[in-house]
Amino acid sequence: MVPFAGWEMPVQYKGVTQEHEAVRNAVGLFDVSHMGELYFEGPGAVACLDSLVSNDIAKLPVGRAVYTVACNERGTILDDLIIYRLAQTRLLVVCNASNRDKMQAHFASQVARQPLGRCTFTDRSDETGLLALQGPRAQAVMRDLNAEAKLVDLPRFGVTQTTLAGVELTAARTGYTAEDGYELFCRTADVVQLWDALLAAGAAHGIEPIGLGARDTLRLEGRLSLYGHEIDETTDPLEAGLGWVVKLDKGDFLGRAALLARKAQPATRKLVGFEMTGRGIARQGYPIVNAAGEAVGKVTSGSPGLSIGKNVGLGYVPPALAAIGTPIGIEIRGKVIEAKVCATPFYKRA
Image 1 (cartoon, one colour):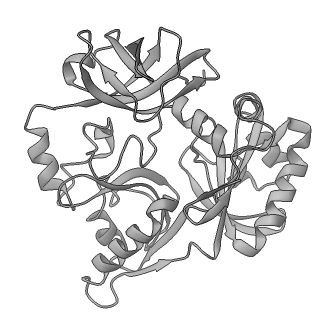
Image 2 (tube, rainbow, N blue to C red):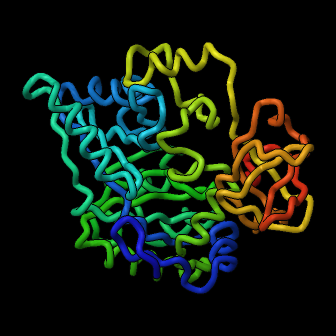
């Protein structure tokens, strides 16, 4: 157990490798109740939120979710988010635990500028629990729990209201593992009941509880960004490979002008994936060097790729070194170890 964003979080239950493999080959259960749950409600909720994030929320149908980022006026990333449209005038925003206070203050101040009664903002993080059931057997576990068909057969990034194992919840077909699965929002008071029911139903399917260690190796293999590593307030979504969530033609939003200006200029760096060709494991902060041995960037994340049999990582490099196959070096404890830029995601389910 380790302290994390004000919570005590499990790094591992039985071991990172065993937990990682359970999610890839069977099913895993994560308690991610530390995440922030923020609600925008009212007739002006969609328009207000749309002005604060980069993706097109106005086009988001009821019952669907979307990944996006919230930027500041400089066009750099305050947080990456998933937004769920629960009803025509009700949206749920899930933010990172480490950014909850920042995003709560940011959103509250923006909503306060709206005409009275048009939009309300509520932070319900403390009263909301969140469990993630992830892996190729996740759907089978739901069937064994007699989940409603609308839950079992949710499309990817779909969201619905339902009851499961006697617990009222909001269920979504989302996750952070590069696998199929569900995220289940319920009252904090119901988390233990839901956790126990999922573990019991999953026993026949090889379920394992999963800690932060495997959560990190799973998301890295899927090239899913982690705030404080690949993205933060020094990075913009274009250089971070998140241009696909930036809809510059949707109308104005916070940071749009800065992003338009950045797009018009040559990029100075780019986030790339790499695999180690020499013996060594890259870790956050290790220097990335060019053929001349000059430091040109830094590793943002690195670990063994447990599903692919290679040590892999992510990091920022100059555009001239960003092409797939480009040789680079990772400085590990004063010694340069060979690596090469490679295609991402490192892992993708067939």
